[in-house]
Length: 185
Image 1 (cartoon, rainbow, N blue to C red):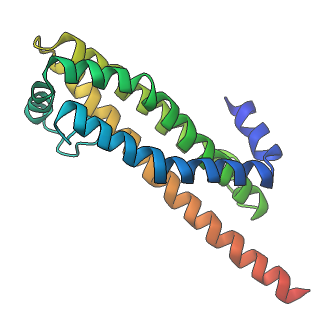
Image 2 (cartoon, rainbow, N blue to C red):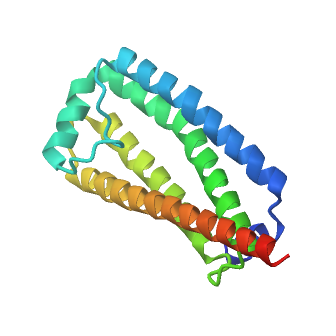
């Protein structure tokens, strides 16, 4: 993993950053709202175990119950279609952007901030696995998978949030260094 992240850090291009930003932006503006609307229309409920921030096991299973059998099957299908693609898109955007800005601004942390999006995507997939197990086993209830889902979700969102903060800070550092470089010239 270290060698792959170092390779990305040293080789990511401006073109790659722009491409992944555009894909991320278009996906966020066009696909996410559509999928959210479709899911609400099919399932009949707007709440989702992977975007619910209640982190209460009873609330989690109430959401699962509210989906009904066909809603649970639709949810599982979405986890292994859309919710495989989306984490890859946001991870590619975050990794390339952070790598490029970190390298360009000569950040002392180098490639190390790239671990944050990797942690996020790993826990996103773990969240999907646990949500799938819960949905497929319901009405049998195994709280362990609920707690694993909640824990995965917390770690995922913390990692994504820290990644975004790191990206913003690196962008600010990059802008400051670019301005200073222009002033010196």
